[in-house]
Image 1: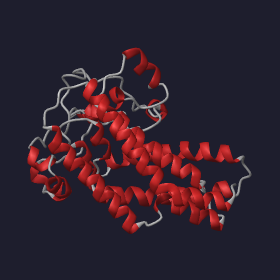
Image 2 (image 1 turned 90 degrees about the vertical axis):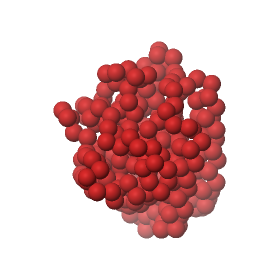
Image 3 (image 1 turned 120 degrees about the vertical axis):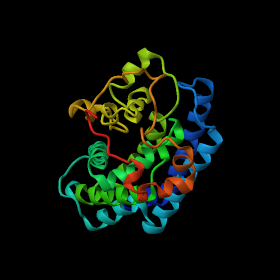
Length: 284
């Protein structure tokens, strides 16, 4: 589908590309949140940012240790051996790239729903939902074990699909950037929000998913394309209490020490059920 030289060049440049995109989006969203915040903070931002960015750094180091080539390396490995559906079907390169990005986005949507449905996986994923505020750093706040499982799922999908290296790098950058964008504590003009959410997940759309109301926690699972929530009936336009009054987080995890600081986040999945950690279920 593409010249092996260019595939290896894209793969070797992947860490630099992702780092530049990460810090660029983080700085942009931080400035936007300062100038046009959607909600008032409940926790001092410095405390949350140190912990949320700290766990993101732990995740990055762990992935690079366990998967030295990251997702792009998996794609390159599969391409060199001709593995995957797209290596068997003669498609234009641009079509294979676009199709792979959309397919991987669907996998992330489906995976997100699975992590809400299976108790052991929910114990990991609730680290993300336990954040008491909602801003750009919430988009990179995930437990390391969830990140490792996500990487394994993504790698399997890449091999089965035969996704080109360029598609995987583009998807990884998009996923990280859109996650930080749609977790942003930013105010968009309502008309612009309505237009954007026809295609992508906006902050007002995804914020619903972080409500303490189980009817809303189980809605708006998408990270990038808004198509999947509309297609599979998990779309909700706005929170019942309104964006300014809705409560962020999990109803039984309100103590800052356990959900804001890095040690508490790392230990959270292993706390006993006596602490009240239940999967959010519709209807109560």
